[in-house]
Image 1 (cartoon, rainbow over the protein chains, first blue to last red):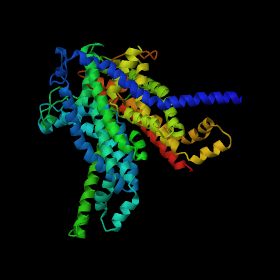
Image 2: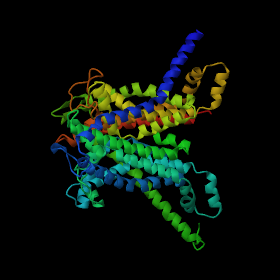
Image 3: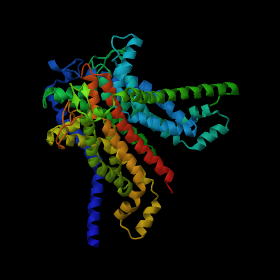
Image 4: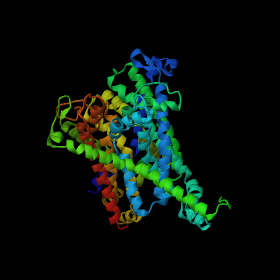
Length: 298
Length: 289
């Protein structure tokens, strides 16, 4: 009896330990399979034509710069929306809103985080882009701007919840001291609370940007999918094509093992490395504030 | 530093303007969410009837119902739960109860954060490379569920770990001192106390899996399949992918069916969200420690 108990305990403990390490195994597996399918690109496409400005796979033009540019322009647009609104909402929720208001706002922001991106893309096609076309007098509403607006909305919950945690973690005594010295609440927020929480707010911004770069369905549906090299911020009002959308739109049609297939996996490697850099940098900040990290993921 | 010149009136005017601005920004963030939900509810409800829910698509998906997509999403969510729940809870138990504070544990945490940040379409690529092609599962519910469950893991692990850590240390000490083994303590004392938080995490993770499209594009999704999947090795339709297809790939699609599909998907996902948050707030209210 006692022996069998010991035995069971050992198996279970082993299982728990393996599950614990599973996250490392999976990140490794993901990277390995991306490399396995994506690295042959470097032997098949010349380096110069891979980092060129023309993406037209049917005629074997595999220049990925327009796709990187497309991701960049859409992400910049989304950041310009998500950062002020996200941080602003976080300050409001954490510092200004009365308690009952907080109890309403926090779950609502969580709901925004849970809306399937395909639903937002669907509404983007039916409502947002026709409106943009008429309002801004554009030939088509399916532009980088439409993508940026929706992506901004998708990144906001991430920014709000991480930034709000950071503000919440600032000790109450800081605020009390500022108020006691005669500062208004507004001055306290700007000159004491926000600076004290700045590393957490920065993490929030980075994770929001990471979320925007990786988003797929919404951008594929509303950005018009034209792989053109963006010239400047004016490109916001033209159709664009991001890295994620390219993979999603074209992977279904390519033959396994073809050059095109390998290039799409190569783009996957680029995306993986970008998210790796964003998250490792963000977590370096996070580890200092242990409690914060648990919220980012939830 | 507060300027000596600013009189108290201008300071409070600034404050009033600032607070007004932040309130407006918050409203701008929150109101569109409500608008989206209400809009889809209003325009989608007329499409909902018995045939729409339980019928098969007809006339190139322009008529009939979405039953195969509903069933597909249900199977995928179930499949994801089968893989992700034991693994995720196991990992959370490891991190909360066993893991020493060392370099390896740090690495595990970095890996979890990274898993959470990897773009969903990259999960799709990975699923295609490993499950569909290398392990030869084909485009199937099995391949899709495995892909989705890896994507879901970070949410389940982090919420469950938080719930386990919230259980007071004294509970464990007492149980061990009464002669229970470590696993008995976890199984009989810690896990039951952390159950509501764990459930919340699991449901939030599955909610994400149910609503995702990109990871299932190349691993499960069938454009149109006029029958229900018969085994885990079958491809299937799924609600999010179906909404994508009928809103971009099918010309002349009746708007009513599109909104109806969006509503069913939204109800599925928000329903899970509601259950998860209800469990969490109830448990918080009842907690005695």
